Amino acid sequence: MLYSRLLNMEININCDLGEKSKFHSTENDPELLNIVNSANIACGYHAGDNETMNMVIKISKLNGVSIGAHPSFNDPENFGRKKINLTSSEITKLIIDQYEILQKVAEKNGENVTHIKPHGALNNMACEDFDLATTISKSINNIDKNIIFLVPTGSQMEIAAKKLNMKIACEIFADRNYEDDGNLVSRSKDHALITDPNVAKKHVLSMVKNQALNCFSGKQIACEIDSVCIHGDNESSLATAKSIKENLLSNNLVLKPLNKMKKFN
Image (cartoon, rainbow, N blue to C red; front, side, top):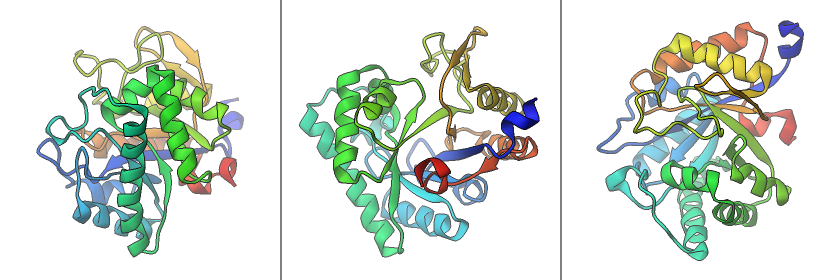
């Protein structure tokens, strides 16, 4: 039964990359780009610079990995993880500016940005705030209606983007636990992160096959799942990425970059 349900099902593995900062190294990025299908690239506001953007894009191009912007609050001191209240116009400028920064680097390499995924506090706030989610959705939709909006499944961003008939990919997090409301367990809690690759691979396969979130309490929440996010800033990210990829492939799933998935073509 499981075999038939997963046979030829398409899924994507994405990772936050190019996040060079005092918090995080890009040492594992080249090897991660041999594993994942799509790269969410820091655009210099929470981490990264032209050098890291160029490096990630060059390797992504070689490996057939799709390129995405990973916009955040302009807050490198806190790695974009501090809540900042901005106006709608300021949010729009934040998204567009970071997309344009990365798109310029991509064009120099003969590539294009094909998806956008918000980072850190901006992402977390928009998961719960429909107005903020709508502002971000409209900003992306106005850049290019063909850009895929990569959103946490069940979030306000998913709802807002669907209202605008946008191209959206719904993601789950391989290395994070979920609360009963579908939001991520806060990083301030001891059980926020999943650091054991074997636990992570089982966590992911169960969610993908059931199209449901596995909450830490044992509760399941039905949802859409197109993509699995690996966080590149975890010590175990490389082992986790390898383990998840091997487990998905051995269970007959088809791994593809976001822009190559049938859903968007």
